[in-house]
Image 1 (cartoon, one colour):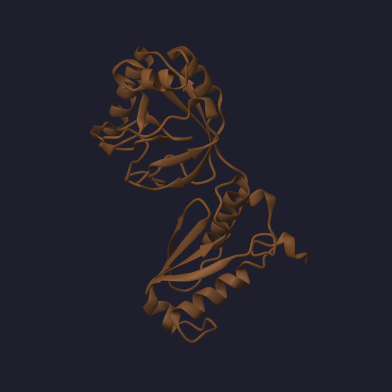
Image 2 (cartoon, one colour):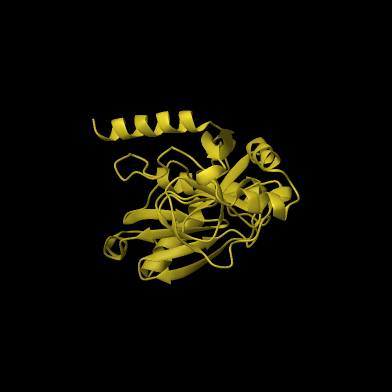
Length: 253
């Protein structure tokens, strides 16, 4: 088996370190790029399909995968190693020698409808002026992009997306807003993201989606997950209101 064909290879030296008594982190690298994201996403799926005794869940990020486990079950298992950390890390190292399957890292494609500007996008003019663009050009460039979800974090369901055109890059606000509504689509630096619930935040808000980005009652609560490919589609306020009504009716039936 060629070394470069496995998840833990010389091409991307992997570090494993303890995080707490019930978790450890696999670091695939320190960069933010699609190759590392593919490794994180692929290995995460492999681990979910092949859990060890005591495995609880994982938290994927830009270039790391945190593995959470039940130390009582791990300790009582016949996994090789003295401590819980040894047992889990040895298991992960062995699993990391599995040959990479291209099908494992196939990304889901998700289209997010957005009503841009107006009350829904109070900062779109800031983004336009900061980049010497018109508001329409901001919308055209934002909807033309193909974005990759690098990480879910900050609050449950908040997707950090890379792949945004540099012409839209805009700094965060110096003073964060106290309340950003659920569904708000924002820009911070070279990333774009969607607020899944009302929360304080400092991103430049350019629009809002009627989709519910996080719902604890769904089988997969977060609409987006690491590795997903996202495109944005501009919609009119009438369509936005219709979709919001549809979401409301679905929740109350």
